Amino acid sequence: MSLAGRITLVTGASRGIGREVALGFARAGAHVVLAARDEARLAAVAGEIDAESATADVVPLDVSDISAVRNAIDGVVARHGRLDVLCNNAGISTARGHVADVAPEAFAGVQAVNLIGLFACCHAALPHMTAAGYGRIVNVSSGAAIMCNPGESAYATSKAAVNALTIAMAKEVEASNVLVNAMSPGSVKTDMNPTSDVPPSEAVPTAVWLAALPDGGPTGRFYRFMQELPMLPDIDLDWKSR
Ligand SMILES: NC(=O)c1ccc[n+]([C@@H]2O[C@H](COP(=O)([O-])OP(=O)(O)OC[C@H]3O[C@@H](n4cnc5c(N)ncnc54)[C@H](OP(=O)(O)O)[C@@H]3O)[C@@H](O)[C@H]2O)c1
Image (cartoon, rainbow, N blue to C red; front, side, top):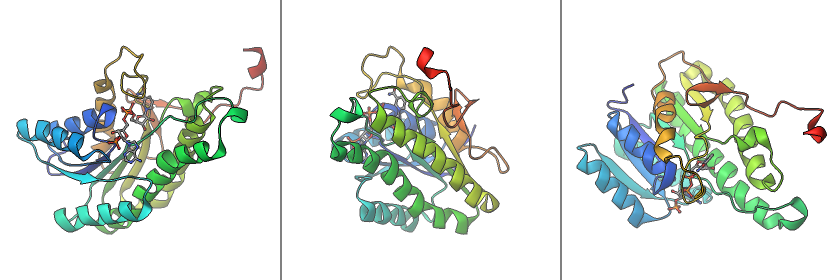
C-alpha cells in the first residue's frame, strides 16, 4: 500500500494512535502534516519522521476552533498545492458517567472535539478534494459507536454521529472520487486507554489501507483490521436480558 507523493493531514498526531498513523503514512511514502494542540510533541513526531527520511510539517491546531481549522486546511493547500488524505483522529473521552451525572456542558465538550471538530475538518477539506477530483478521508471512530455502553453516552454518541456523518458524506462526494470511511482502532494502549495491553500501532494497517484506497474503492463503510463492521447499533430488542 503506497502513499507515495500524497499530501496527508493527521489530527491528534501528537501522541497515541495519531502519532502511529502519522508514522505509518510517512513510511508508506506520504508527506504528513501533523496537527494537534501540543506543538512540542508534534515537533518530536516530526523529528521521528525526518529521522526515517520522510517529510512532515507541524500545524498547531485545536479542532474545536472552527476558524482555526479552516485556516489550517487552507494553509496546507496553499503550501502543498492540495490535500489528498485527511485522517480525522483527534478525540477525547471525557464526560464519563451516567447521563444524570454528566453536565450538559461536559457532554457538549466531547461533541465539540469528536464530532464538530471532525465535521469542521471535513467541511474545510472537501471543497479542495472535490475540486482536485481526489480525496480519501479516514475518520477514527470507535466500537463504542455500536456498543453504546452505559456511562459512555457522550463518547458513544459522538462516535455514532461520526459514523452517520461518514455515510452521508460518502454519498455526497462519491462522484468526485472522494472516498470517506470510518475505522475502529480497537482497544489499544494510549493516554485515553491506559489499561489496554495492545500497542496503538495495531491501528496503522487499517488507516494506511483506507488512505491508499484505489479509485472506485469502498466508501461510507466502517472497518476494524480491514474487516467491515456495522456502522450503527443493530437494535437488539432483547437488550434488557443481556
Ligand atoms: N485508544 C483506544 O483504545 C481507542 C479506541 C477506539 C477509538 N479511539 C479513538 O482514537 C483516536 C485517538 O485516540 P488515542 O487513544 O490515541 O487518544 P490519546 O492518546 O488521548 O490522543 C488523543 C489525540 O487527540 C489530540 N486532541 C485531543 N483534543 C484535541 C483538540 N481539541 N484538537 C486537536 N487535537 C486534539 C491529542 O493531542 P493534543 O493534546 O496535543 O491536542 C492527541 O494527539 C480518538 O478519536 C479516539 O476516540 C481510541
